Amino acid sequence: MGTHSGDRDRISHIGIGVNPGITRPTGLTTIDECMSGMVFVAFGENRFMGGKNESTLNIDLVCSGATVLCDSRVLVRDGRLALG
Image 1 (tube, rainbow, N blue to C red):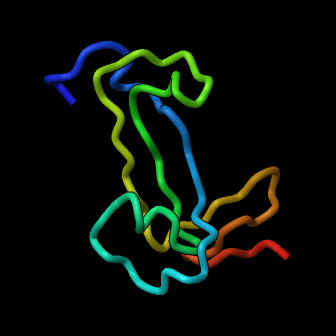
Image 2 (cartoon, rainbow, N blue to C red):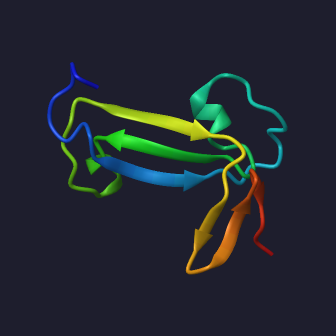
């Protein structure tokens, strides 16, 4: 991150994968982040999504096995979608 400029240390976006066709991580972040129940956090540039972060960095980091709550409602539990 140190070699990048701008808003490199700001969260760009957070996402939850919903593709049930991806059954195991591949090692390719752009595919793995789409796997059902996978949570990812992106840092840096986000103007391409309507945000205001301007940076030479845009990186997504996947978090397998995560639990995500929104207003005490569980969206993802231990890496599995809990919606429904």
